[in-house]
Length: 475
Image (cartoon, rainbow, N blue to C red):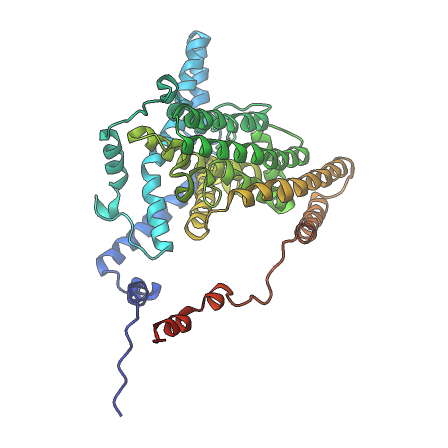
């Protein structure tokens, strides 16, 4: 009996899936030279880590300016040396400020170059596409090519636009994306400004983007731009409230508005706040996607409705700046999410071995990958859905969460019991209350899961293929 020939997949996408090798096949197909090089690299890496472990255990790095686990040691040593030399305090402050600002600008600048390539390649993997692969190895130079292209394009100013205000928003919108990094601690001594009111500073800075968006839409003298700006302003103002309520819960639980102390509180009790108040973490993350105009909450630039939203009339590099700031805001939200809810630069004691900034950067990448995942898989919400979710669902439950956390913070401060029991009890209570409130409030608002979906009515009413056949028949 002859073997039946294998059926070829019907669509190009299915053929691409079938032809893609498995993980085992890909590993077995690695050349021998690459395997040998990988083995040697692994041995060198292990030897280097063993040497670092010996130095860390011996205590030779503690407090030294070359202690790479905290780059703030070098800055502090430089400050002490300049004070001993009798330099003017203004010069000393300026040097340290320039060093910190250079670090922030370097991080954001490098990410704005590699971020578009990372996101486009990752989304291409999700959607079974190729992604950038022509300019440079693996398409690494695609972002540079795009930037050069945007710089060469002509900047067209609308005839009825306010020319003075037209040039302000592309630059002004970057201010919150840069200033927001100020109070973020990367290590115990590695923060640009360790403010006592760091949480209030974070909320205030995040609100500045509303002005740039509104000015960009208003000064363009375009109805689509103005409509997109008003939609974005309404969304940002609405979702500022869940963010504030979520951070209020964190402040009450930790007893501090300083970001470094919030991280130290999580390290002291060996717990992440996301495990204690998960709904606050969800509210902060979801509301932040609306604040930074990320999918699925990017209603300010809905192509099918308002062309490109508030920056419809911006061309060339000015339009590119609006698109680039989204990437900068995404990693800033990742840093905030990691600091408030994921332990910041700490990782249950591993920060004694691994530099804290490496740990925080890893957490930022994980949160950013979640943003990419959402963008690759979810459609955009409608405006009424997004606004209704904020005012009818997210804000009421967040207010109840704040009330519960206030009681728990009072109990935690007055009850002399092991933190493992009290915080564990708080986590169980908050998770249970969140699940119960979500279910009850969803039922109250009329949201329900469709158990038995009905067949399409439109095709049955219109007639479909059978009706078309009846029409083709002669009378």
